[in-house]
Picture 1 (cartoon, helix red, strand yellow):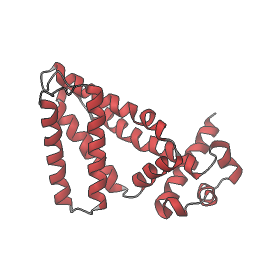
Picture 2: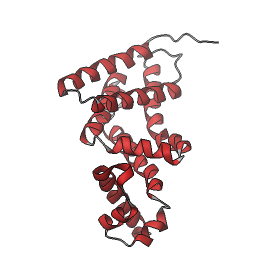
Picture 3: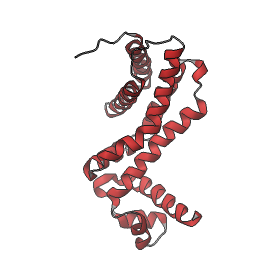
Length: 198
């Protein structure tokens, strides 16, 4: 069983490198297996095409966010602390690797695996929802907000802002300003008493 897991991990690691270097359109399965040092038939034991690799790469990226927050987050420290931690990590990951998140998300959209989004993101959404629920109990934020919905809004906003800043090549100083304003915007959003639209 360990060998199976290792081969799949090897394929994913190699695919990550090749996608990053060549982009989605110019990547071939033959390049991935060459990078991995495995037979092409081994690739097809796990995936039907290069597009099939993309959901697992997305899973790794989101899992890395979640793992980081689980290791460094602290519910007792309050929502502001944990929110800033999430913003810092997501921005940092996008700055470290400017190409792979876009490739992965574009690839999933093109491959028709949109239904996998909730499965991929659910652990991260649930973690942020836990931060929000704790903040509600502590009186930090309004009790009327839906932690489940707001967690999705928050992660989507952080990710889209981080990717946008990378695309438009903002300076490090400007990025720090955006992070500060983004944190303030989200905190203000959860402090408000929402108006229910019927």
